[in-house]
Image (tube, rainbow, N blue to C red; front, side, top):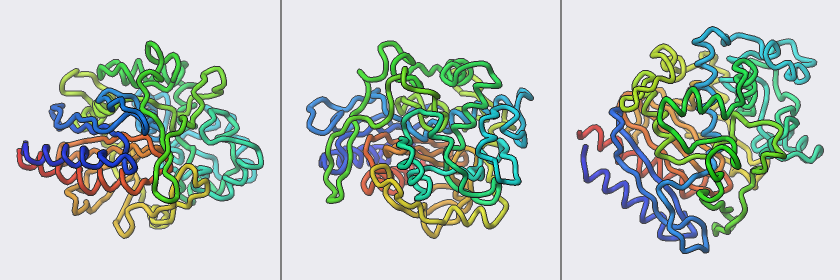
Length: 396
C-alpha cells in the first residue's frame, strides 16, 4: 500500500469539506481484498449550521445503495432453488398483474434485476412524475401505490432505471416468509458482523437511527446549501412496505464489508461469513446486457422530472457501459484506474460506492445532499479520491 496515496485521498476529503457550501460533511471508507481498512475518515460537520463534527460511524440514508443488498438476497434464494431468474413475478407477487394489463410480456425477475421491467422512477420520467402529482404520491413515502405507476414500456424492450428492485424486495419477503429487514439481518448482516444497517428507521437498531443520522441538505440553484429535514418517511407506522430499492440506513464501514465479501467470491476473509457462492458472485457482477438497444439506453439523458430530487445528467457520457445485477459496469475501464471488472452505484442523497474486483479495492463516500448527481460530491469521489485508491493498491 502506498501511504502517500492514502494521505492524498484523506486530504482531498478534508479540503472539500472546509467550504460548507460545497460539502458540509462526509464520510469516506475504503478497503482492500483482504478486508484491511485503507481509509476510514470523516470530515466537516454533521449538518450545516451545526458545530458537531461528522462522525466516522454516522448513519446515512443509503437510498439506492440498498439495492445491492436486496439483489444479493434474491440471488441467495436463486441458489437455494426458491426463485429463478425467468420466474414470472406474478407467481410470487400477484399485485404486479395490475401493471401488466395491456402488455404482452410477463415481467420476470431478470427484467427487474436489469431494470428492463418497463417500470420507471418519478425522479427521471416526466409521465411518471405527472402520475405522482395527479395521485398525490411521494416517491419516498413507503406506499404500495408509489410502485404501482403505469409501465412506460413493454417489459424487456427498454432499460429504464426504476422501482424494479422494490418488487424484488417483495419477492424476497414472500418467498422467505421474513420481512426484508429480518431477511437482511439473518442472511447478510449477521454473517458479516454488520450491526448498524437497517431498513427500519425506528426499530431496526437499538434506539433507532435518528440519534446517529447525518443531517440532510438541499443545494439551491445558485449553488448554496441549506439544511433540511430528511425527505423519506421515517414513521414506521405509516410505511406500507420496506423499499428494497431505497429504504436502507447505514454507515460506510459496514456497507463496505459487503463489497469485501464480493471481492472474495462471496465469503468475507475476516468473519468467514458467506453471503453468496462464487458462481453467485460471478452472476451478480457480470455484464448482463447483450441487446445493443438496451445498452444504448444507458447513454440516454436522465431527466430531472422532479428537480427537488435529482439534477439532469448523462451517466459517464461517452464511456462504454453495461449493466450488472449489482450496478453499472465500465467494460473498458476508466482513465481513473478503474478496470473492466469494476461496478459502481449510488444513492439519491449523493452516496456512492465502487468495487473493483480486478484491482481488489472497494470504497464508499457518504454525504446527505439533494438533488442527486451533486457537482461537488460525485467528482470528488470518482475523479479525485478513487484514482488515489487504485494507485495505493497497485503500489502495494
